[in-house]
Length: 149
Image 1 (spheres, rainbow, N blue to C red):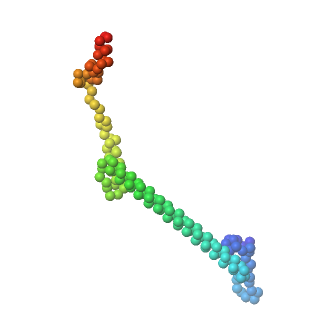
Image 2: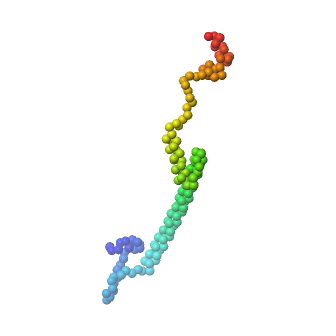
């Protein structure tokens, strides 16, 4: 069968070619009024369905755009809060703020003195007349122990 794609597109059963017996014209196809109505209905349904599909896609795209705008705003707010927590001055754009935070994190990571330790010479020195720095010899239970020993 010839013209299978056209037949499928137009929703016809087949295409009948006509030619005049006495003319030198090439064969041509004719449509009946019923076939033209069928074709018109198919095209209008297709256009209506396509329009509804495009409207749905537009609605979904707008919803995604709104969600991305909110996400971008939330991220910008979180970065500004991180800058304030770190005591850093906020910059104009989120990229500059993130770069400054990353630089500060690298600076802290590269630092050799990360912790402060109390100085300890290995001996506990008595303070406030306490033994070993924390035992009060004047407490009642300590007096009792000293009298037994």
